[in-house]
Image (tube, rainbow, N blue to C red; front, side, top):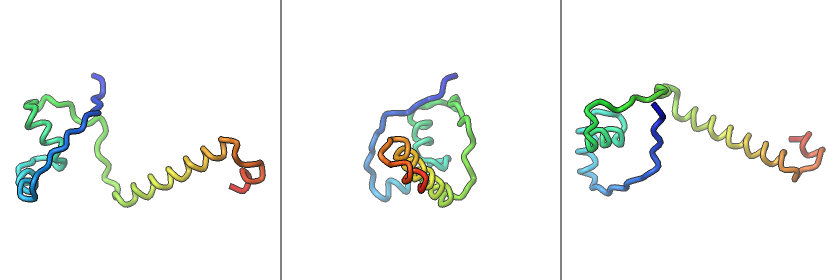
Length: 91
């Protein structure tokens, strides 16, 4: 079965009290997942995640993402030809 790609966004405004009530009713850690299952009435037929959620520290993952972003920017700049040979060696 092909992976499901969600591209549409639905914004719903709620009060603080309504938000708390939705979070209390949700049996899932992610409110959007619970709302899809509840509103679309999939009766448990929804395909589970192909990859389990990481148990790594979120702060560590953000730092790694930032490092990867910096590395991509450097690689793009080096490969663009904007720098001379000495600048490339220095970087």
